[in-house]
Length: 408
Ligand code: ADP
Ligand code: ASP
Ligand code: MG
Image (cartoon, rainbow, N blue to C red; front, side):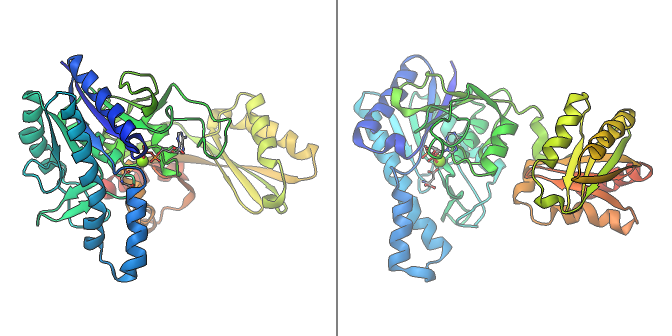
């Protein structure tokens, strides 16, 4: 018999009829033999409305602790209504809020962006939530909320119910986490911004994290930190009132210990090619010209960065001669680019961790030891979850060891 964690977003329980539909979908799943743990957000825009009220009444002087307490009311209400609706359909249910003895999610005291104590949460899930599921009771747990060691309510940050769902799924060793929301799944872009957006049948954890980090509200970027590879996950629409409906499956992660830092060095030498020209930033289509040329010739680019008067590209050393030739053809064909150089042999070190997103100073941590050891960084590129450092090939191994020492 499988364990399913079902999370209902605000819109999915936005009116009485939807709450009823949600409860029916939960009970149906239960009747088909699953153990179902439910996580629910505040009804509709309750959290936004509370924030507005507080702004207009208390104003700036509201403390984080007070605000967390006030915001928690949204989820305190929704769990009670949803749990009572499930009971009205003839199945035992129990709501669980931060004041319940059985409350599982324990955090530090950063009231509005609380950090989760994984061990204590896991221990409490095992002790309380597993027991309820074994007794055939459907627990309905407040999303978004935590409790600190003083017993005060904390929140996991806006949109944090998604985090609650995956966290509880992880602690339960669930078979599936189902995120029920107001879109059919993950779309090719925000459907509110482009009506040509279409649903994706699947997306990887890595893609989803980047999409969320760059602003796609459909899932909280921290939620997938708790997604184990063997736990199935999907995002579906509330409209169907069916937890088994197809939406977007979230696949992976491919490297489950990405929570820890992974540091790797490319075993092959790279070569750097710098293409120069005047005022490149203001010229259209230069990057397109370069990348098309590279693609036409089946060459792989390991890194690209743009500056005011140059664009640098990294190729495998074995492909660099060809890249040099074809890019030279491009340079002499037009007026935009003046010249290019094929430079030194380069080592590429990649540092990947989902923790980077909210770790200030990570680049300094990587670059300081290199600076202290007189290693020159030829190029550095960073995204939300990865930092790639290019150094001279002769410095590669040492730089790799130094970065490993600092970060692991
Ligand atoms: P919930 O209250 O269920 O958590 P949210 O409002 O937090 O729902 O997230 C769902 C919203 O995310 C959608 O209504 C949609 O506007 C937005 N969104 C942004 N990017 C995407 C995307 N790529 N795919 C689907 N929805 C997206
Ligand atoms: N109710 C909270 C919010 O609006 C949490 C959530 O919806 O996930 O931010
Ligand atoms: Mg949300």
